[in-house]
Length: 325
Image (cartoon, rainbow, N blue to C red; front, side, top):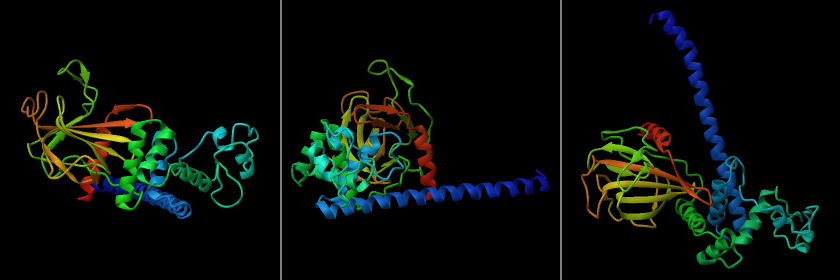
């Protein structure tokens, strides 16, 4: 490339890169600002109701996870209009007296005498009262959640999200990490959906990251350890459910990190174990395939759970991990 062409390319490339960097920075700042606004609202309702903010935040986050197009909205919790205003309240009168008359659940959270589904403080105050219907202990809140969702996994996930928020004292948890140490040799490609023969015809529900025995395996996200132990297909494996209703599955481990147990809270970068080749047999079976980490991701929408391709996320997290280090 001659100097004239080089200067031409440089002249146009630098402004574009600067523009993209500025856009990304603005997006991150706006996202953090939104999460701070939410936290202020949660804590305001905590002051009024004595419900710890992290339960309300977890309830809201779970609803955001199972609904579409809610990520950029201040509050994701919503209620059916007939439940909020009352079955006979055809005109949807939002005066508190009318809602009470028609046996609606909507409550006034900002003190203006009205309960509007479009007012975040009213919605959050109503949600807090719903969670407190049976009392303020953890078990009481679990009962309230069960009455609302009628689903064990939904209750468990909300409580786990609350556990993470309480531990880190914030809802703004954006960090991510690649699941194996990037200072070690590794390789991977998209293998989700490929056929597998062991145990019958089935598809490969994850991405295989090949690395040497003993390569550190780390947590990619914030979450709670939900599963640990032996599996016929996955060998020694560990499962972590994050704050976005995603279950992260790490399989074929050679060993676990010391003291890691079911119920533990993890953050991106925490050591989980090491790469191995366990599985395809009874406990202790190893060496039937090259050492690698099988990494799977499963999304729960409040009704069903399914596997999806982790490869695009791994590429993004690999880049972020390298930038962080």
